[in-house]
Image (cartoon, rainbow, N blue to C red):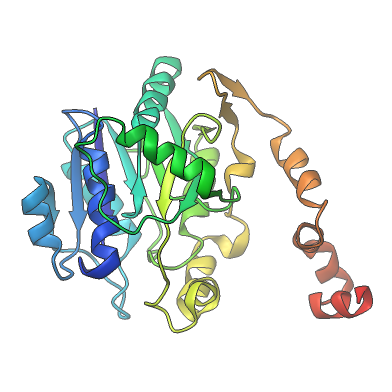
Length: 297
């Protein structure tokens, strides 16, 4: 039914712990789940052999060494044995509600893109999957100690095989590729379902030590700007705020035609939201954020 594909960092230290947690959680969703891991980083092959995953060491790379998203999407759709695929970052623990959401979406419509907001959660050790209540415990940890991220952070994408036949040479590990995937689904006529009210997707917190400027660098460095340019220079950027449908807590899928309008109005209740949502106007008037902050101060 479902093939996961992903790429991983070296399996060492905390990264090794959270990546094993993620991969094991995917395999436990259903007996027919297939998992493909692209890349030849340290320990990837051994982890795949240990967990019974398909390892594809070859992957297209930018001259910087960063991996190309288009290569992974093309190859995964070519070699997958299932009709639906899920690209997920390799730090996401997915629980049975994720699988239930896919089944509900499939019974509603055959072609869709399923996404959900993540819950940023501190997970420092290997999950004891043999514990009877591990799923309930993980869900409770995320909802009581974690934080649900804003709709701009998208860490997994469930879609029908063959839909993403052409993807720009975007690189993972930098921003803006995820928003292009949502834009492509909307422009291609897919229903984009935000299942955030139904699915608790657990993002295991980690550092951004692989970049000298941390998370900010992954948004602003030349590779990130290259991604943004390839993704239409900002014109082909969409998030869960633009989803055409939502899944309710009860699992019903409903249309959300004014979602973006209400989301922007809600965001503008804060100073940051006001700045973000008036960017187009401030650019036209020649007003910089620093100037507004000085005026406000």
